[in-house]
Length: 288
Image 1: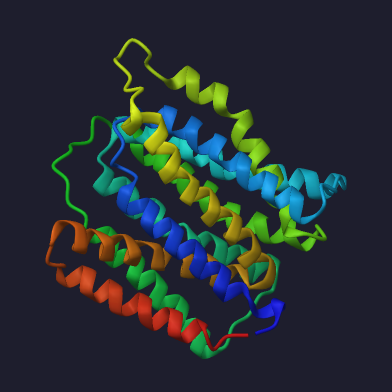
Image 2: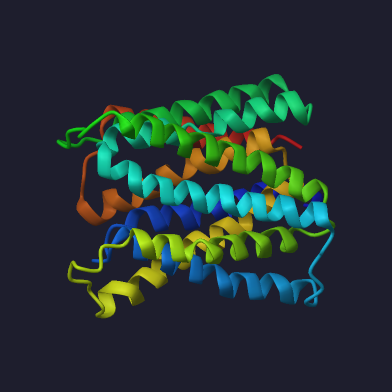
């Protein structure tokens, strides 16, 4: 396999790391806003590896800097908005909305990047969205929305994350290396740490034992590794394929791990989602 075609391998790394991250992300007893801080800091070692790969010669072209920072702000900003959205509405309504954010990527990539896929590839994209919807619909919660503000906030997250993948592709197109894009993403995440701290209610007790910040870091580093691989996937592959592929298969990994850990029998929707996602990756493995 040539380096040009390694986009699928990178997308699968994202799927695996994000899948494991999703299965264990709720394990630590730690505030969500401080989890953001830990996640932002976990981007730093990955950024150091990225810099080492390019011999610490960071691309400082203005367009590359602006696009790289834009990718980071859209991703990290969306994460912070998500925390606020969850204060106003139930997760079972919010996550189905934001989980299909790749449709924004597909639309933008088709219109602005003129990306095209074969008929078989189009079937793969459809299967990816079917998988996303199936896993979203399979989530249950007894939460009740406090007000309608969650709709606006969740929509902002949807737009941020869908646009992020598109801008990531643009950044890769204007930067000679994917590493610089990731470094600017990490910088953006760290710059938003003060905002997360301001959103934190320090009047509440905070767990500082091992299963607090330390376990959180061990889990969040998987998210950062997945994001690093996603930059490469978008560099070598089509954004309109990479985005739905990564987002569709991560829930499959999460569900599979959860089935083993909790001996849970999957619902019909989950089974359909798993079948759709596996079919999706088999199709995309044939896309050049």
